[in-house]
Length: 143
Picture 1: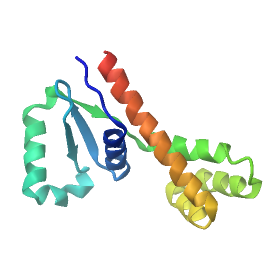
Picture 2 (picture 1 turned 180 degrees about the vertical axis):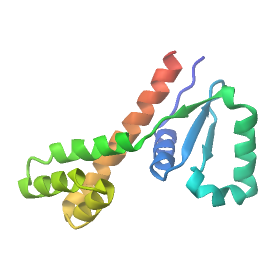
Picture 3 (picture 1 turned 30 degrees about the horizontal axis):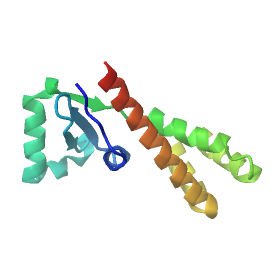
Picture 4 (picture 1 turned 60 degrees about the vertical axis):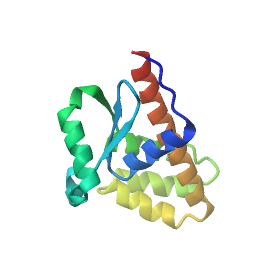
């Protein structure tokens, strides 16, 4: 089997994962199914989403899921923080933010007021998420 994904498709998958959705890839044709998380069940009310959920339920073994967890997201925050050699003050602030209770909220609050570093964070995060998706697709396609 040979399925190729372009940059746009990889970004689409990563964006859906970042929004908290689950993404499934058809093993034969590479088509995508995007399903809201349980806490977004209100989105299943739409006919299209209900149809996708039904399709997945009826053909679950035909798909593989692109995995994304809070530990993956946390690791990206840590990596970004570790690479902030040019601003020791912000680096310390971000390290403190992720070491406390509610690390994601604390990190967001700190980075939102970090001027140009905020844009660097989003570029870094998007790149790492895209790499994560691409690695999972490649791992499956090689198996």
